Length: 443
Image (cartoon, helix red, strand yellow):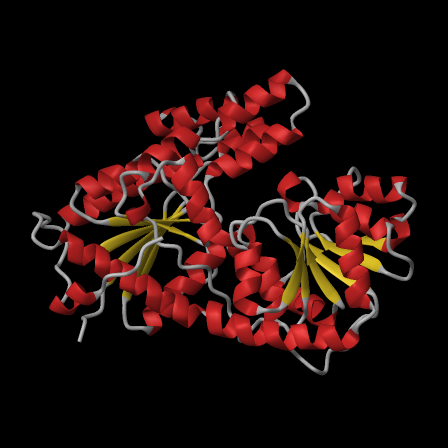
């Protein structure tokens, strides 16, 4: 029997409300611990929820200067308790890089993680493997040079976000800012040199292979997981008639919110859209809805807690995912796990997800007319919605439960360790001989 592994996770942001990387870190760590593996975590702020299943969770400091520049909170650069601390080399570099528009968190976190790992190895700590979540900073190459194999989860390459930002830019200065902000070169260079890259989908693997030039044999598309106990149907929650739900940021062109609101304008009342997105007076979606004369049919919820999100999924008639690209499509999977059918764009990983689950229908991306027709058709067919909802729930449990994702991820770890056997690496403990059979078919 294969022995349990000692695993070290690194994540430059750990809180679930900061995006998918925090959700991924918490749930994958929990399921791996349930399988008997030992979990340690190095994480940057904002911190994850309590992780009682982990052996230890160590916070690495981060001044988050970029956000302070953006908020024009310059007084926060020199905290009263240590006003000159910012002059230490790495913090001073972060301050300067943030000021010129570069996003320094992944690099700075990776350097701090490298220093922490090196110190702990000297003090006698041992791990079998390091799993990075979405950082891909230079410091990971230092960790690998210490003899530790390193794998990294990348939901999609940063080039996707950069292209979306270019589409949003209106001036040359904004386009230059986009080029400066995204650390694409660093992430591509590091990704090509790690032991495995774990995309969330075959679509993500294709883009990482194309944009980051990662060799196919180093890519393993395992999918994301979902807490199917939390995201589940509840027959006691009534459906709100003619209510569409979408979870996505209107400020991100990739989320396709503009197309959805244009489609809503083509649907008759009382059809309405509930949008889970941070609200503010100048919200792009509200401006467009008002211009189209449907402002009263759009409700923007702002940020909501997970229990409320689950209730919204359960009560919606349909969930719409109109994205122009998705590296996985978590809202679609969450909705189907709650028994709610999905209408999604045929973009990125969404076709993969809907093929695996059978819980929705696809429309051409960016086509408001086709989206409106699909929504109108399902709104008129409750029996079809019921069939899709049941199929989606069953498909999500089969394909995307965290227990299965964690087991497949552990197989990847053992495959990496098997490849490393025989190489001089005094800081890792060789896997049990059973790891010889832990070979996976590769993307």
